[in-house]
Length: 221
Image (cartoon, rainbow, N blue to C red; front, side):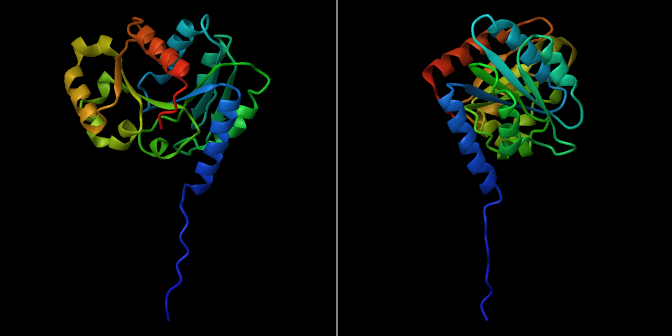
């Protein structure tokens, strides 16, 4: 007797909804950015600095992903931009269905750029297409030079790497050049930015690059 096997792609449903999200973003001319990082990389602080730079140039909305709290959304709300919080109740990543539901709650607003702050985790978020135009990965200098080698998929799928907290370099044993070389060995196409949110260094360069990419209307997944 032959064994019958039913095989189905685990992410099939997610990918179908992601394509639907992408079509919805395109119809509204919205450029969507999926921000990935480990916990504590300074992702929310970076988004705050990005809003400060971009809000007088272009309309922004934010979807915040977190395991349990609304704390990050409350921080973003103070900047006067539309924001929706996704609480995953322990799930370690956002998926396209959650983003679709959050996006529907933003439909009363007009905006050009949607920033999606994913759950702090460098494993699962890399595997889920949310319908975004680009993934941006944030790595703080305190996390170690070898992070790209340990979590290659997240770096491989991202269009840009932000090396954050460069103001701490004098106090830690970390090398920007080693981080860059390790990241580029995984993904030679990565655009790399060095930032400090506390000293407001490098965020302008990141934002200018995003504006240019949006103007070219590129989908880089």
